[in-house]
Structure formats: structure tokens, C-alpha cells
Amino acid sequence: MVKVKDPKSIANALKELLEKNHDAGEVYKDGIEEAESDLLKDFILTQASQRARFAKELERELYQLDEVPSSCGTFQGTLERTWMDIRTIFMENKDEAILAECLKGEQESAEEYERAIEKYDFSEDVLRALNGQLDEIKYTVNKVSKIKDLETY
Image (tube, rainbow, N blue to C red; front, side, top):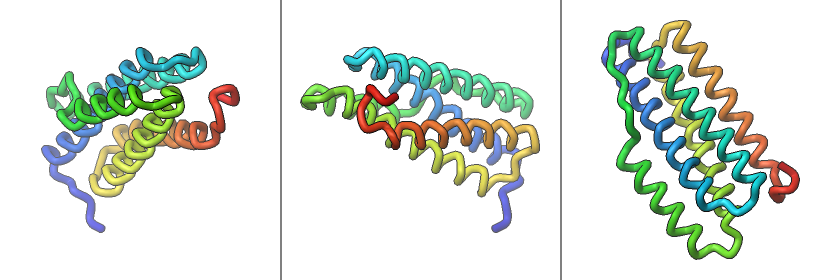
């Protein structure tokens, strides 16, 4: 597959990943309010901080491309947060529902990063940043997938 080399397309791909990180950060912030377990709250806080760091790294890369980064998420992200809010209201074990949503979101993020890395001809610096973020996301997916209950986190 020939990778896309157009600078504007590459910048747009980075902007999309940035928006997804903003969305993920907002989902995690909402999850803190809904979570009952202190362990889950700690996990969510760690993830929210990680996504804020990812966003800053992507913003820095966009500035290097003379692009102005977006400072907000997407409409889809707002819908997903609303869905999580509604779902957790009716769940007996809110923490399990929140953890399941976190896992689903992290898996989707990993797939989005993989698609972007495969499709676009990013510079070595951008590629290094994206692969580092992807590794952290995959680590989280692996860790959360193995959690049987919050006590094992």
C-alpha cells in the first residue's frame, strides 16, 4: 500500500487523533464522577492524564507542521459520553460498566492509531510519538483485559 504523503492530509490525520484524545480525556473525566471504587477512580485519573499528555504531544507535532490544533473533541465523542452516562445509570455494577467502556474505547483508539500509521507517511518524529502512544494504549488494553475485578488492578 502506498502511503499518503500530502502534508494537509497528514495534518488532518493528526488532528483527528488529537480530537479522539480530547474525547477520551472527557470520557475519563466523566467516568471519575460515576465510578464508585477508589481503584477505578485512580485508574481513570491516570488514563485522563495520559490522554492529556498524548494531546499535548500531538499539538506539538501539529505546530511543527505549521497547523493550528483543535482544542475540543468531536460530536461522536459527546454521543459516546452520553451513552456511557445512560448505561451506567441503569447498571447494577457501575464500575464494571465503566471499565468495559474504557476497554472498548482503548481498543478503538489502538485501531485508529494503527490505521493512521499504516495509511500516512509521517515523519520519523511523528511516527515515534504515535508508536509510543500506541504502545501505551495497547499496554492499557492488555492490562484492563486481564482485570477480573477491580481488586486485581
